[in-house]
Image (cartoon, rainbow, N blue to C red; front, side, top):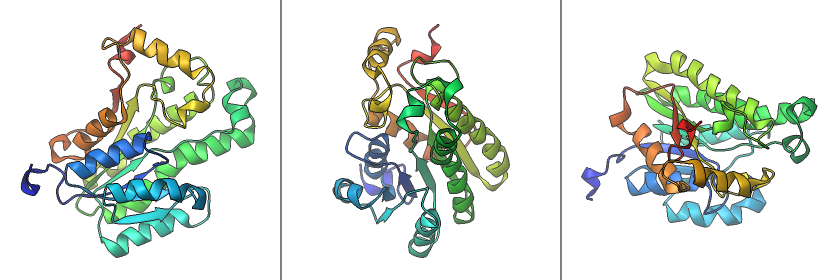
Length: 258
Protein backbone atom coordinates (compact mmCIF):
# COMPACT_ATOMS: atom_id res chain seq x y z
CA UNK A 1 0.00 0.00 0.00
CA UNK A 2 1.16 3.53 -0.65
CA UNK A 3 1.69 5.81 2.33
CA UNK A 4 -1.55 7.64 1.55
CA UNK A 5 -3.50 4.38 1.92
CA UNK A 6 -1.99 3.29 5.24
CA UNK A 7 -4.79 3.55 7.83
CA UNK A 8 -2.47 4.67 10.65
CA UNK A 9 -0.37 7.10 8.62
CA UNK A 10 0.30 10.24 10.63
CA UNK A 11 -0.44 8.64 13.99
CA UNK A 12 2.19 8.50 16.70
CA UNK A 13 2.13 6.17 19.66
CA UNK A 14 3.97 4.85 22.69
CA UNK A 15 4.30 1.08 23.07
CA UNK A 16 5.36 -0.23 26.48
CA UNK A 17 6.25 -3.85 27.15
CA UNK A 18 8.60 -5.02 24.41
CA UNK A 19 10.98 -7.56 25.95
CA UNK A 20 11.76 -9.81 22.98
CA UNK A 21 10.47 -10.77 19.56
CA UNK A 22 7.68 -12.87 21.11
CA UNK A 23 6.22 -10.02 23.18
CA UNK A 24 2.63 -8.96 22.58
CA UNK A 25 3.91 -5.38 22.56
CA UNK A 26 6.29 -6.20 19.72
CA UNK A 27 3.49 -7.76 17.70
CA UNK A 28 1.61 -4.50 18.14
CA UNK A 29 4.66 -2.46 17.17
CA UNK A 30 5.19 -4.44 13.96
CA UNK A 31 1.58 -4.07 12.87
CA UNK A 32 1.37 -0.38 13.79
CA UNK A 33 4.57 0.34 11.86
CA UNK A 34 3.39 -1.64 8.84
CA UNK A 35 0.18 0.39 8.79
CA UNK A 36 2.02 3.71 8.82
CA UNK A 37 2.22 4.69 12.49
CA UNK A 38 5.32 6.21 14.07
CA UNK A 39 6.20 4.53 17.35
CA UNK A 40 8.17 5.12 20.52
CA UNK A 41 9.33 2.00 22.37
CA UNK A 42 10.58 1.53 25.91
CA UNK A 43 12.89 -1.01 27.52
CA UNK A 44 12.95 -2.01 31.18
CA UNK A 45 16.62 -1.47 32.04
CA UNK A 46 20.17 -1.56 30.71
CA UNK A 47 20.18 -5.37 30.62
CA UNK A 48 17.00 -5.41 28.54
CA UNK A 49 18.13 -2.67 26.17
CA UNK A 50 20.43 -4.95 24.15
CA UNK A 51 17.45 -7.17 23.34
CA UNK A 52 14.89 -4.43 22.75
CA UNK A 53 16.88 -1.86 20.81
CA UNK A 54 17.36 -4.00 17.65
CA UNK A 55 13.62 -4.74 17.64
CA UNK A 56 12.78 -1.07 18.06
CA UNK A 57 15.14 -0.16 15.22
CA UNK A 58 13.48 -2.80 13.03
CA UNK A 59 10.20 -0.88 13.28
CA UNK A 60 11.94 2.50 12.85
CA UNK A 61 11.08 3.63 16.36
CA UNK A 62 11.62 7.37 16.63
CA UNK A 63 12.22 7.19 20.36
CA UNK A 64 13.78 4.30 22.31
CA UNK A 65 13.58 5.09 26.00
CA UNK A 66 14.24 3.41 29.36
CA UNK A 67 11.17 2.80 31.51
CA UNK A 68 10.81 1.02 34.81
CA UNK A 69 7.42 2.12 36.10
CA UNK A 70 8.55 1.47 39.67
CA UNK A 71 11.50 3.86 39.35
CA UNK A 72 10.81 7.44 40.44
CA UNK A 73 10.30 9.93 37.60
CA UNK A 74 11.04 7.49 34.73
CA UNK A 75 7.47 7.53 33.45
CA UNK A 76 7.37 11.30 33.58
CA UNK A 77 10.65 11.46 31.65
CA UNK A 78 9.23 9.24 28.89
CA UNK A 79 6.22 11.49 28.38
CA UNK A 80 8.36 14.60 28.61
CA UNK A 81 10.56 13.23 25.81
CA UNK A 82 7.47 12.48 23.71
CA UNK A 83 6.12 15.97 24.32
CA UNK A 84 9.43 17.55 23.36
CA UNK A 85 9.92 15.43 20.22
CA UNK A 86 6.37 15.07 18.94
CA UNK A 87 4.27 17.61 20.81
CA UNK A 88 1.27 15.27 20.65
CA UNK A 89 0.37 11.62 21.06
CA UNK A 90 -2.28 9.50 19.36
CA UNK A 91 -2.09 6.18 21.19
CA UNK A 92 -0.53 4.28 24.07
CA UNK A 93 -0.27 0.50 24.29
CA UNK A 94 0.37 -0.76 27.83
CA UNK A 95 1.50 -4.39 27.84
CA UNK A 96 3.32 -4.86 31.14
CA UNK A 97 2.52 -6.93 34.22
CA UNK A 98 4.46 -8.36 37.12
CA UNK A 99 3.90 -10.35 40.30
CA UNK A 100 6.54 -11.87 42.61
CA UNK A 101 6.77 -15.58 41.89
CA UNK A 102 5.88 -16.75 45.40
CA UNK A 103 2.65 -14.77 45.29
CA UNK A 104 1.86 -15.73 41.70
CA UNK A 105 2.20 -19.42 42.49
CA UNK A 106 0.33 -19.26 45.79
CA UNK A 107 -3.34 -18.96 46.69
CA UNK A 108 -5.03 -15.58 46.54
CA UNK A 109 -5.87 -16.16 50.20
CA UNK A 110 -2.18 -16.33 51.04
CA UNK A 111 -0.92 -13.43 48.91
CA UNK A 112 1.43 -11.09 50.73
CA UNK A 113 0.62 -7.41 51.04
CA UNK A 114 3.90 -6.46 49.35
CA UNK A 115 3.29 -8.88 46.48
CA UNK A 116 -0.25 -7.64 45.94
CA UNK A 117 0.86 -4.02 46.03
CA UNK A 118 3.68 -4.64 43.54
CA UNK A 119 1.40 -6.56 41.18
CA UNK A 120 -1.16 -3.74 41.30
CA UNK A 121 1.52 -1.07 40.95
CA UNK A 122 3.10 -2.52 37.81
CA UNK A 123 0.12 -4.21 36.18
CA UNK A 124 -2.70 -1.75 36.89
CA UNK A 125 -1.72 1.57 38.42
CA UNK A 126 0.97 2.21 35.81
CA UNK A 127 -1.77 2.28 33.15
CA UNK A 128 -3.66 4.91 35.15
CA UNK A 129 -0.45 6.93 35.38
CA UNK A 130 0.12 6.65 31.64
CA UNK A 131 -3.42 7.82 30.95
CA UNK A 132 -2.91 10.86 33.17
CA UNK A 133 0.37 11.77 31.49
CA UNK A 134 -0.97 11.09 27.99
CA UNK A 135 -4.10 13.20 28.46
CA UNK A 136 -2.49 16.63 27.83
CA UNK A 137 -0.72 15.23 24.75
CA UNK A 138 -4.01 13.99 23.31
CA UNK A 139 -5.61 17.37 22.74
CA UNK A 140 -7.06 16.08 19.46
CA UNK A 141 -8.19 12.80 20.98
CA UNK A 142 -6.44 9.46 21.17
CA UNK A 143 -6.55 5.83 22.22
CA UNK A 144 -5.26 4.07 25.33
CA UNK A 145 -5.02 0.26 25.27
CA UNK A 146 -4.02 -2.21 27.97
CA UNK A 147 -3.78 -6.01 28.05
CA UNK A 148 -5.85 -8.28 30.27
CA UNK A 149 -6.75 -11.98 30.33
CA UNK A 150 -9.83 -14.18 30.70
CA UNK A 151 -8.78 -14.86 34.31
CA UNK A 152 -9.97 -11.36 35.23
CA UNK A 153 -13.57 -12.49 34.78
CA UNK A 154 -13.48 -16.22 35.51
CA UNK A 155 -11.36 -18.35 37.81
CA UNK A 156 -8.48 -19.83 35.81
CA UNK A 157 -6.44 -22.48 37.58
CA UNK A 158 -2.95 -21.21 38.50
CA UNK A 159 -3.63 -17.60 37.39
CA UNK A 160 -4.13 -16.81 41.06
CA UNK A 161 -3.59 -13.22 42.27
CA UNK A 162 -3.27 -11.88 38.72
CA UNK A 163 -7.01 -12.52 38.30
CA UNK A 164 -8.04 -9.84 40.84
CA UNK A 165 -5.28 -7.54 39.57
CA UNK A 166 -6.49 -7.78 35.96
CA UNK A 167 -10.09 -7.34 37.15
CA UNK A 168 -9.05 -4.05 38.74
CA UNK A 169 -7.35 -3.09 35.48
CA UNK A 170 -10.50 -3.80 33.44
CA UNK A 171 -12.63 -1.78 35.86
CA UNK A 172 -10.16 1.11 35.69
CA UNK A 173 -10.51 1.07 31.89
CA UNK A 174 -14.27 1.50 32.15
CA UNK A 175 -14.01 4.43 34.54
CA UNK A 176 -11.31 6.18 32.51
CA UNK A 177 -13.30 5.64 29.31
CA UNK A 178 -16.15 7.52 30.99
CA UNK A 179 -13.91 10.29 32.28
CA UNK A 180 -11.84 10.83 29.14
CA UNK A 181 -14.56 10.25 26.55
CA UNK A 182 -15.62 13.92 26.36
CA UNK A 183 -12.04 14.75 25.30
CA UNK A 184 -12.15 12.24 22.46
CA UNK A 185 -9.84 9.82 24.27
CA UNK A 186 -10.91 6.18 23.98
CA UNK A 187 -9.78 3.57 26.50
CA UNK A 188 -9.74 -0.15 25.76
CA UNK A 189 -8.92 -3.52 27.27
CA UNK A 190 -7.66 -6.18 24.87
CA UNK A 191 -7.78 -9.69 26.29
CA UNK A 192 -5.65 -12.16 24.32
CA UNK A 193 -5.81 -15.90 24.74
CA UNK A 194 -2.73 -17.62 26.20
CA UNK A 195 0.42 -16.84 24.26
CA UNK A 196 3.89 -18.28 24.61
CA UNK A 197 5.50 -15.11 25.92
CA UNK A 198 8.23 -14.78 28.53
CA UNK A 199 5.78 -13.23 30.99
CA UNK A 200 3.28 -16.06 30.60
CA UNK A 201 5.94 -18.69 31.23
CA UNK A 202 5.89 -17.72 34.91
CA UNK A 203 2.37 -19.14 35.31
CA UNK A 204 2.43 -22.62 36.83
CA UNK A 205 1.41 -25.45 34.48
CA UNK A 206 1.23 -23.03 31.56
CA UNK A 207 1.50 -25.86 29.01
CA UNK A 208 -1.82 -27.24 30.30
CA UNK A 209 -3.39 -23.81 29.83
CA UNK A 210 -2.15 -23.75 26.24
CA UNK A 211 -3.49 -27.24 25.51
CA UNK A 212 -6.86 -26.38 27.02
CA UNK A 213 -7.14 -23.21 24.94
CA UNK A 214 -6.46 -25.10 21.71
CA UNK A 215 -8.94 -27.84 22.61
CA UNK A 216 -11.79 -25.59 23.78
CA UNK A 217 -11.57 -22.58 21.47
CA UNK A 218 -13.95 -22.77 18.49
CA UNK A 219 -11.03 -22.06 16.16
CA UNK A 220 -8.92 -24.80 17.82
CA UNK A 221 -5.79 -22.71 17.66
CA UNK A 222 -3.71 -20.27 19.62
CA UNK A 223 -3.69 -16.65 18.62
CA UNK A 224 -0.36 -14.99 17.92
CA UNK A 225 1.11 -11.57 18.61
CA UNK A 226 0.20 -10.30 15.14
CA UNK A 227 -3.46 -11.23 15.79
CA UNK A 228 -3.36 -9.02 18.86
CA UNK A 229 -1.54 -6.28 16.96
CA UNK A 230 -4.17 -6.26 14.23
CA UNK A 231 -6.98 -5.78 16.75
CA UNK A 232 -5.07 -3.00 18.50
CA UNK A 233 -4.45 -1.30 15.16
CA UNK A 234 -8.18 -1.34 14.46
CA UNK A 235 -8.93 0.16 17.89
CA UNK A 236 -6.37 2.92 17.29
CA UNK A 237 -7.76 3.65 13.84
CA UNK A 238 -10.51 6.16 13.10
CA UNK A 239 -12.73 3.21 12.09
CA UNK A 240 -13.13 2.44 15.81
CA UNK A 241 -14.07 5.98 16.84
CA UNK A 242 -17.44 4.84 18.27
CA UNK A 243 -15.89 2.21 20.56
CA UNK A 244 -14.57 2.71 24.08
CA UNK A 245 -14.49 1.06 27.49
CA UNK A 246 -14.90 -2.49 26.17
CA UNK A 247 -13.03 -5.73 26.75
CA UNK A 248 -12.11 -7.07 23.32
CA UNK A 249 -11.21 -10.77 23.40
CA UNK A 250 -8.61 -12.03 20.94
CA UNK A 251 -8.69 -15.72 21.79
CA UNK A 252 -10.20 -17.68 18.92
CA UNK A 253 -13.54 -17.64 20.73
CA UNK A 254 -12.30 -19.38 23.89
CA UNK A 255 -14.14 -16.90 26.13
CA UNK A 256 -17.60 -17.91 24.83
CA UNK A 257 -17.23 -21.52 25.89
CA UNK A 258 -18.69 -22.87 29.12
